[in-house]
Length: 59
View 1 (cartoon, rainbow, N blue to C red):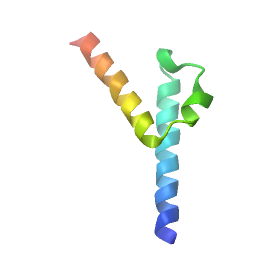
View 2 (view 1 turned 120 degrees about the vertical axis):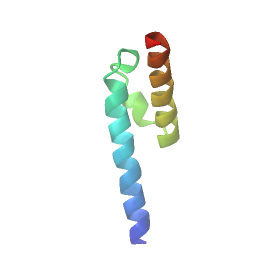
View 3 (view 1 turned 90 degrees about the vertical axis):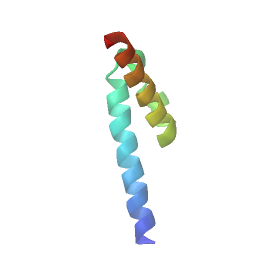
């Protein structure tokens, strides 16, 4: 039972971190409440998409 709580805490911490990163981007500014409804997978995919977009602009 304790492992489940630790896992849930880790997921929530990761989600908060990604929401903070995404909210700081121009594309997601002011959308924090909307981002909170995303799953961890959706947040990670969105972060990867933005990183890829950034790399394409640089290279």
